[in-house]
Image (cartoon, rainbow, N blue to C red; front, side, top):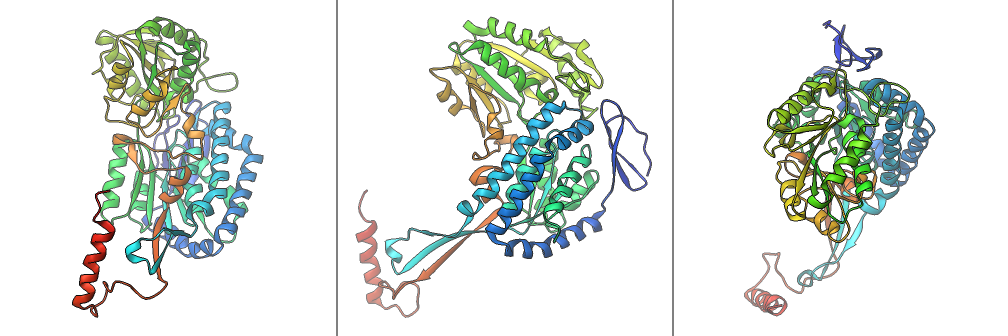
Length: 501
């Protein structure tokens, strides 16, 4: 099939997926499109490789993952240049992303044995003749469906933890960034050439669907909430467990004792980094009345200095997925038509493939710009009476990924009250780089966790083992028990558990 090309829009030509730069239309790469049989074959290879990978043990996997980490660290500029060419983001942003991914590989490799290794667990008095042990075993083959907006750190956040836990992985990168996905798999193969422990399959949505039906032991998906529902439905047919990291509508709360300049600096980056194409982007701000005017002025001043374009010297790149421009434009138009004001940018800020920073105020809470994920360089700032009102409005959404609070006296308490999987205090989005902490959301932002101890366990199965140490004092689990044994059980239950505390 041959399709008309448009900059940044993936097309299939003669069985190959063609990837292009969203700003220039430059061809970045061509990759063979997998069909259902190709996906099944990749999973079959991964199942065979899993035996070899598991047999290496924690020490063997750790050594190989650390060598992969070292290779990526030495080639970080190469990775960043490819991310920029294929997705459009500034090279500096791509370096920060790749550095975070490298740290995740390091943490997963170094901590897998501690988190997942066999351990003795305290038993119970009623079963004193048994010892209890717990261990975590690999699931087998994990399918990872990655996004385009962070094509290194996000898939690596699943891939590295799944590999460290002893699984093999089949990666389906976004059709908008196949070159980056292929690069990750190729670099891993340089370190682990013996077996296809990490493989890649390319294509459009039907390839992701095929991966869901392929017999993998788990799917880790990152993308929109709508597509997440489709992934869940597909996996439900075979009872394949899923991890879903979906959309967000993150809010920042600015209290009256906040450092306004610091809050504005963090807000501008959190809202506009990667052209706002971040599931964790700050899309809403609730600023307490005494600091509202100063905060808005400082945000406008800082955002107004940012340069938009593609190449060296620009702070904000193009919108990677061209159809998202229509969403951004609709949200701006809706906000302005309903009484909102653009204190920076506005309708004229939309200049495909770019969108300049747009700061909106006086926007109704039921507008699309407040209720729906925009995924663009826009921000809605709302004045509130106090932190309680800010928390109520911040939580009034179906999403629940991350959030942030700037302030002193009430900041940590307010962060705890946010209905989110993660929160930052006097910073934004810092939890994505904290390898030791779990990452994931609630509500329409998904479920399951990557990163940290929880991320390693996410790609493992707990296995409980009991071992007899001696004869049973209470003959409960046998048909040899007598009425006297039953009476002894009753007496023991009352003695052990009959107290009120």
